[in-house]
Image (cartoon, rainbow, N blue to C red; front, side, top):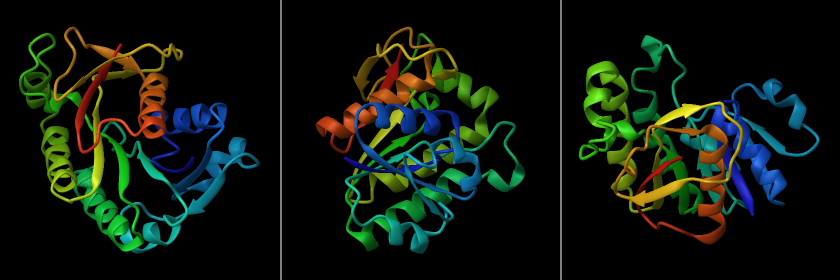
Length: 208
């Protein structure tokens, strides 16, 4: 598959590149700073641009089967990134409409699972990361009302533990005792979802 990867220089993004190459796919990284991807330069396509600019994104979308987005604010979150996810969702959906690309798989956060009790994801997010909850909520609202085929992936705490290939998945809910998951396994789940066309227009919780 031809995969357009957003947020490719972040933790999940790098893992998407690694896993997609291992599985024989052709990833294109759309990034602001291509120099960060020098280790991949001879194995992937790299397009330079701003993921908040719908026009530049739309130009690179033709020829791709699906967008895989791991874009998110870096911690600690700068004041200028307070609405990063909201603005990104607007740009992404506009770019997809312009280009005709219909399918995207986008990382969000398990903080938005209001019914999660063990762990109490929503309560924890509202108490300690209210800005992330607010921004991700706006992002998801834009994605879910876009009329496009967008899968929203909500992982809990992300870790740098090695890839296991084992994860639990539940549509519209965070699996019980879903406390954490390696970034590599989130990437693996996203690629498998793209390969098999799973979870059309869905919100999915994924955890170890």
